[in-house]
Image 1 (cartoon, one colour):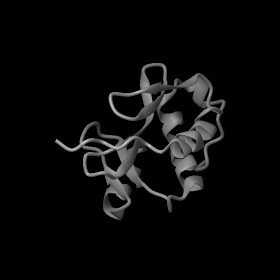
Image 2 (image 1 turned 135 degrees about the vertical axis):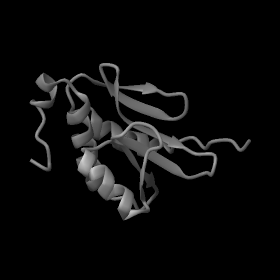
Image 3 (image 1 turned 180 degrees about the horizontal axis):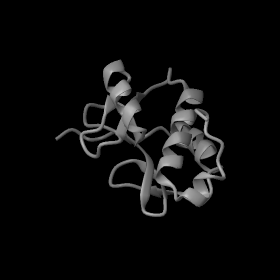
Image 4 (image 1 turned 120 degrees about the horizontal axis):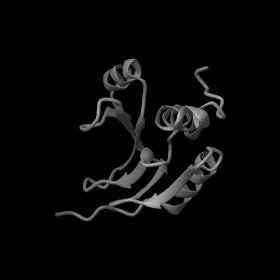
Length: 123
């Protein structure tokens, strides 16, 4: 079985700068890669695949899941959970767009009292 590549530290650092502004959101090492959680809910998970490609998964509103699925690469629908979507991450990734998607993901996963403290880009 092919090895999964380690996520570039520069990408983890970029995500840290996005995720650290969310109240009570914390980083932890996942079974592969790194993830950010609020309570026991995963907000996003960044990891390298056996195909040597990098992915980040996050949560989206139900109508957006369908849109992401139909957009195709770099987006995809997760194979688990009805609101899990993701995108392939590479050097050309639009990190501003990804920050907006992760803000929405945090607000979906966090308790209302915490989500209310965050301005959503789609609001």
